[in-house]
Length: 272
Image (cartoon, rainbow, N blue to C red; front, side):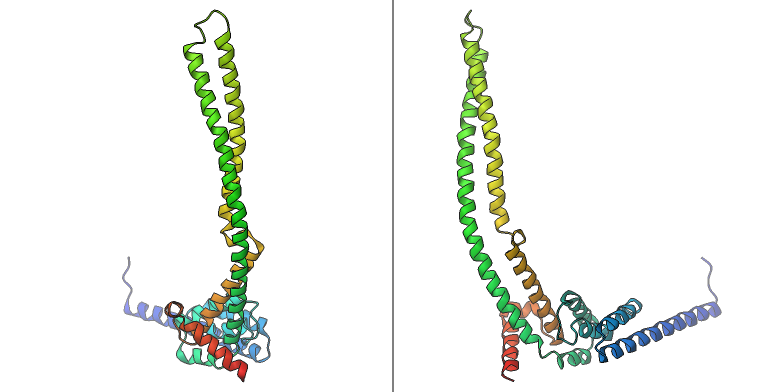
């Protein structure tokens, strides 16, 4: 490769600096527009402007902080919770303490929302587990019945098949009449009938076993899916709270201190 002269290197550096300055200026324009939209409660406009700014600068903590405000409508609406939680993740990585504190000052409703969601999740989980237990008992009985039926068909099939094979191989041509031929044919027909019955019962056994497994999956029922959705929302709300308040979710889930802190703040907010 050709070696660049000092003049060429300097020109390239100036070009890069100019491009960076133009990009930073565009980001500043979009951020200012987003702030103006937030002041006017135009959250859609703010989200659009911040999206454009984020395309230009993906490591700008202020953009992520403003996204949290825009997606949550200043912590009053959680219909875009997933996007808000993703913005909080960006804030955690790129934001400053000052930015996080600015959100903390306006997030007084967040602990109450988390506490409310926790109660909903607990209630849904309890109901879901009760329903699972009721279905589990029924499905296990069906599987046991299907297993017994399968065994009742598989055993005769094996016996008839062996008899047909032994008689056919050892005795069928030992007599001039067709006695052993008829006996072999009878056992073969019985084995075939038992095999067909075994296939039917095998399908029922597979279906019963499948229902036992599906019963343990929350995605298999409307109630289970509702629980999973609410639990996901709780985790997202907790992530947002943890970022704003500089709390480690992993550590506090183990020690239950995050839940206690949120509950305490929610109770304080209710008293006020």
